Amino acid sequence: MKRIGLGLCVLMLFSGLRSQDKTVQDLKSDASQTIKKNPNDTIPMIWKIGGLFNLNFNQAALSNWSAGGDNSSLSLATFMDVFAFYKNGRNAWDNTLDLAYGYVHTTSLGSRKSDDRIDLLSKYGYEVAKSWYVGGLFNFRSQFAKGYAYQADGSKVLTSDAFAPAYLLLSAGMNYKPNDEFSVFLSPATARWVIVNNDSLASVAAFGVDSGKNSRFEFGAFATISYIKKISASAAYTGRLDLFSNYLHNPQNISINMTNVLAVKVTKIISMSFTVNVIYDNDIKSVKSDGTAGGPKPQIQELMAIGLAFKFGHI
Picture 1 (cartoon, rainbow, N blue to C red):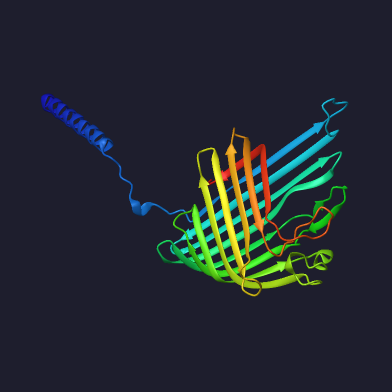
Picture 2 (picture 1 turned 30 degrees about the horizontal axis):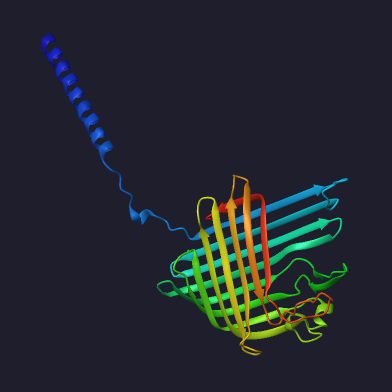
């Protein structure tokens, strides 16, 4: 009996070792297999959100400085460009917001603006063919504070104010958007309101409103081209061109509004930005050196700055 019991124990031990060896071999075999991702498990990104915030500051003070210059100067400039793109099935909704304000103060010239901009653009589209959408667009443009034209004798002439002007635009049309970087919106039917919420500017028919009126209605054709490009890990470009023709008054005069921003990240917190803005509107009169109104002229703004930057999201 002892021999039988000993034999059974040896047999059970041998069987257990064989079973353990088989389990180890199965685990090695499973580990060597390639795990493939099921494409049906991928959840598409519905929202793409990103933007850039830039802050630039400069200060100087002089005392008995033989090279000359203002006794003190201070400048501050900031801008923010943000976007939110929505895509779900055939529905697409693009939103961009550009805000900018710049301020300069010197002992000889006093305080002046160097930049001032509010620009909100929202587009909705329903895809009817590959990269083609039918839908609508909303755009609002204005500024934060008063603007002046400065004369040679040091006097200043008021040329603009908050909501003077402000442009409110509603448009229906087609949008071509082959990717998230580029889009073209075309509309033959666009309503635009020009708002001058300053009575002194409205009284001289500034920005095309009738004298004494605070707003003007326009109806015409509209086109906007938008381009956002991540050039490299440290550089990004944002550009937009708006064109508008008023059917009700001199449709041959095309209003142009173009913005270009190139932002380059030098270090983690330091960036350089270069901005060029161009505006031409036949209803915006220029100001002569003597302070009187002149004819319409192209408005060109160029800004270059180095300062702190914060970039976030898909940019």
